[in-house]
Every structure is written in structure tokens, then in C-alpha cells.
Length: 125
Image (cartoon, rainbow, N blue to C red; front, top):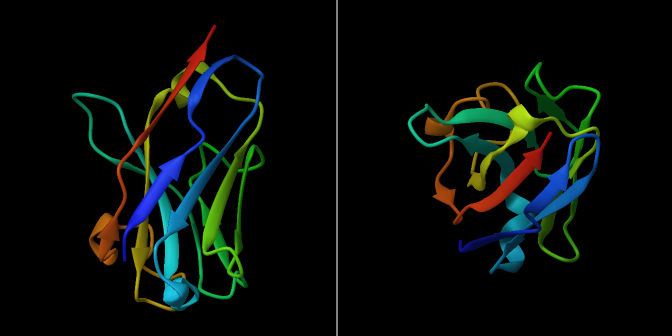
């Protein structure tokens, strides 16, 4: 599965962005999808995940109430709507696909089988 993340950019604090993760295969609906982020010199951080049907989601505490993950399996795409952005949300955001069907364990990057390239999100103060 090839994943293409897009939608990053420069936004002021309090603003919004919507990231997209598009997959190359129609079997994308068979994968759970997660978003992670990484700041240079720091460890990769879990952001959010969604199961195959979209029935279960999970979020990092730092983004709960501000970010919303969703998916449109007819378009082979997962979205991350990011509202009320803060400067410490600045990072490269990556999407990843996992064959696991349960949300349990999907906070770990090791649970994912495929990774896309990142998209830069920069939030200015």
C-alpha cells in the first residue's frame, strides 16, 4: 500500500488545517490508519488512529477535543481535521496503515505496516 499525506502548511495559532492520507489501493478499507508526528531531534509521537470501518478512533491526550480523524473508504482516504492549532503542534505529520483491526495497540508505531511520506505543519504564535 502506498500512502500519500497532504494538506500541511503554515497557519497561525488558533487556526485549522485538514490533512489527507490517500492510498493507492482499493483494499485500503481493510487497514486501520494512524497519524503520527515528529519534530526533528525528538521521538515520533502518536496523534490519532481509526479502525477499518471507522467504528473506533483514538487520540493522544494532547489533541483530544481539537483533532478529529475520519475516513472515506470510497475515496481510499483518511482525514485529520486539526482545529485550535497550537505552536507545539508544529511537526512533520505522517500517516500509516496497519492490518490490525482493533484499536488496541494502534498507538504504537510498530503496529503499522506501511508509512507515507510526511507533510509539514507549522503553527506560528
